[in-house]
Image (cartoon, rainbow, N blue to C red; front, side):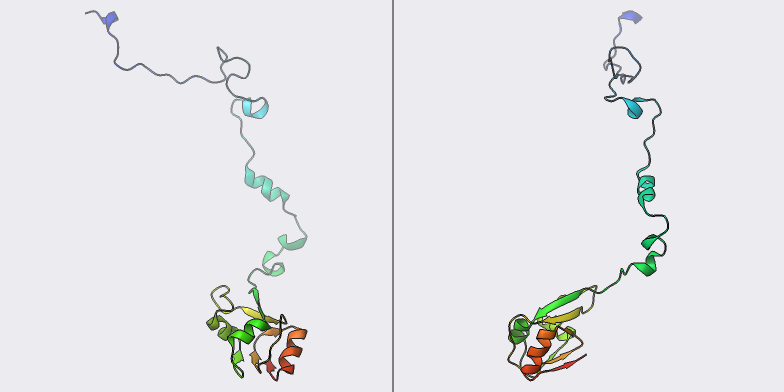
Length: 150
């Protein structure tokens, strides 16, 4: 046995040098021309481009906390037909009672603002409290003998 006849069990694997000429040809395995094909290329940071697109002075960029109302409570709408079927005559309709009856869902962990709309009609005298009421719904509720407390 001589030194030049010995062979290793595993072959020595070398990674191909990309962009160094040789047998790769044309783009040397880089795929494109331009900035991406150059050595030491750096792409522009995405965040800088996003910041540059924002307006500099006017509008809500100047004092965003004041000009954009972010923590508004969404308004849930309830129809008169739903009130007719869920409530008994003389009962109080409020955001809390609507939440208990399952006619509205919680908004940001609490009872939402509610607006009563005049879809269908109502025949019971209901007491509406702490809810916004549309003009036709107000007329229908008052005609049925109900009261509205704002």
